[in-house]
Image (cartoon, rainbow, N blue to C red):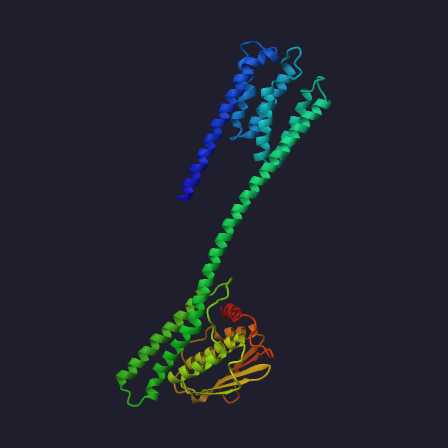
Length: 409
């Protein structure tokens, strides 16, 4: 609707401009015809045609200003060279014709390509030599006309530049608006991806582990109950695979940091308790205080522990998990390992984005993560996260999350 209204407004503006152009042409013609016998020696029957050549090219000022200028300039040259003017009249063409030339040259300078503008100005300046009082050549009067035409061209080019700058500014504003909308969409997609990966996938993994280890943890499970647990585990695994597919769609460049409250180092205790309630045989030791750990390091610790427990539950369900957190004065050491030889159920699902995300989260705070099999047959994730001495905060933890999420893709 707004676009249609803008088009109607433009049409109305063009209609008004065309009406004014016609009015000016009629006025020029009404002035040129009755006064032509005063300035030139022309038969009465020819006077309307000469006046029309002086006035009516203005009608092309919007449709084709270059053509209008060419007709006006060509007819002015022919009139100046062929038609004699009255004694005492120093101008070889009428004043109306000169005004038409000025108007058409202005329109050419505003709308035509720059080479055509240069040609029009040069040709009009040469035409000014025929309008000089000495009968030809570039006298002082001819140079005055050339300078006047140049001033008109320069003013028209200034108007042209202002109009183009305005159009470019409007186009840039529209582009910026589209870019803001695109970045808002990317931010929302990134937030959804973080929620799916860091929350939903984690808890879904625990559901799978509970369903598959229930027959081994609970006594007296009937075959029907075992089949039901198997069905629950299969459904949860399918949901996990679909979530991983969605992550590939949702994760994209241009993510913006999220400003929602982020987990801290002390929140890892909740992860341990939740894993134990889900049936994971987990033991943990914490050497040092979690509360003084900077927020960004605490966020990285939380996400690395969360991902490590999820991977241990998926790939080695039933295996005992041992977690060690050592908080020193300048660094935090994390170790999450399990014993694959003690696995009592088959591995679940396939790999995802977690390991790359853990490395990126550690890198965001200046640390590092290593993961791989142990000599005794187990698998271990180790993290080294530096802590700034004597500081309780480091750069915004949401920035670390954004860096990690970008690497998770």
